[in-house]
Length: 193
Ligand code: IMP
Image (cartoon, rainbow, N blue to C red; front, side, top):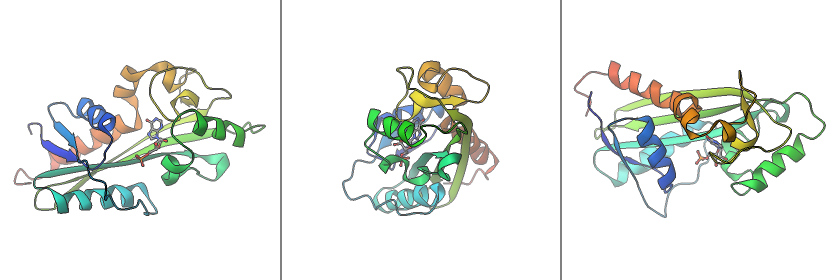
């Protein structure tokens, strides 16, 4: 199937560009509204579907939504679906996380990404991706965003912020979710519209 023109249910232009890289041939424009519903879902899928249905009600054509987060085993899976609200984006969130894990050696964690795509007639396709790893003892690296300076993927010694955006484009939870979504789309009947 050729690339799609979709709106992304997010005001985050950075996320739209990242997803355009992960979904080659697609055109993805952020839906810039100030009345998005609160992300009250219990799961990433709930929140992604909430955003996608909101977008579907306000546009014609394909609608894409994504929800993601970081789950830390030693914190009982927190911050999880609340990752974006754990602390302000960037260094304060990383500092808070390192503080909570001080003295804890069991640092297993994972990133999760859930993508929901709705067609013009509200047919739903989804893709999930996870990236297993552990939380470093100190922040390292300059690329990526959010928790990337302290997340070390399995099989690596460097953090995602050190591994860089090229690595993320191939191996991240979002890259895996995009791949799963493309497979779901490829398997869907050609009449999907
Ligand atoms: P949302 O999906 O916009 O609700 O926010 C997800 C939150 O999870 C972000 O604000 C980050 O804190 C965290 N997160 C999700 N994906 C990543 C990633 O690739 N790198 C670093 N942090 C991430």
